[in-house]
Length: 213
Length: 213
DNA sequence: TAGATTGTTAATCGATTAACAATC
DNA sequence: TAGATTGTTAATCGATTAACAATC
Image (cartoon, rainbow over all chains, first blue to last red; front, side, top):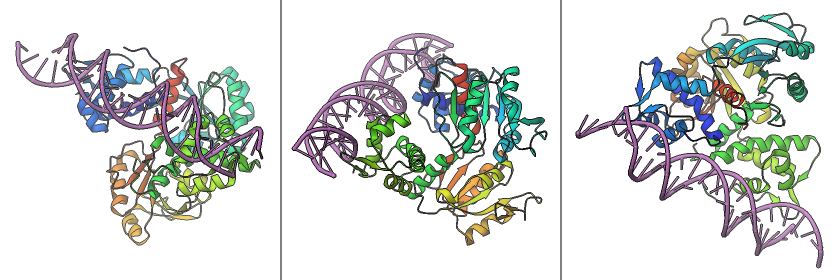
């Protein structure tokens, strides 16, 4: 096992492997070779073996990988056994949709609270969680430490809210605000979902014929 | 100007530049050097100049880049002047949220229709669009060709729906279904928003101290 | 055992960074 | 003009692919 720094590219492939392995498991496949996995995922077998070998030795020479075991290893690597607690900050359309659709439990997270500023939202129950007043977010987080804040507030208040949750001890922000939060990485981890970046990338490939990904 | 194939890495930085330039414009900045832009975005000036030079010569030696002009060039490169038409397929929580929050017009797209299978949704008006029955999607698309389909249907019907819109001539799918649609790139462009991949990536960095991005 | 397939080292390829001549 | 900063070529660095000995 190499104990070098693992590149972001490798990390971002891990959830893809996980998804694929769960799919295989669902279809009753219990062993697979890097060759077969590669051809199903559009990756080279070399890359797959390199990727896994960053974290350990999960296969068996002459046999391949046991799907269930590999799945469990990857789940562990991704921190799914930590059961991180998640709070939603901003229960607008998107925050609401995430609360109802995103099966946090299924991928190993605990949704513990939701906050909004709007009087119409405060006190309502969404997906079993009673929405609290954003004004109380700091004291609440001090009492109930959370690992991850899902930031689904309007853009103008994004940076301010991000600062608030960081100061209250939140360790990571899942950022949907279409703004770059430039925090120090030592301070807090930020993962962005920039919808418009994604749509514009699609638009580029659409407008540049012959430039398929 | 180099006319090589432009790498995906470069393409994905373009929307980031766009966002930054609009921010600068908003703050009244009208010229900027690659040096300053780099330090504000956390990129090297070299990379920025390399990136832009893939598409043309947008700067001025000894002066830098005119923000407004550069913004317009990037917008054009990304296809924002094409005014691609977008249809929503699946008006659940997420589709609904996208219809209401995503300012398609602002980034150069036209939202033209929305489809759902649920009788409670069909006929309702969301963001000025009357939701139609998914059963009629093929004939409708034949009459009203669309460039992009936003796929926000439940996972079990994702592949089927994707096939339907492709067969009806849609050229690109913005895929929110948490499933990989494995179409030939010549056939149709697919851009994925995999929420759980993103959250699990965040989770990885959280659980591996010292592994900041 | 023989065949298959891993884990890992070496080779290649591509992307980022550095350097600098061109020029505004 | 002198200083600044681009666009581009060359150098470096990192990621992917290929090859192969180890071994199940």
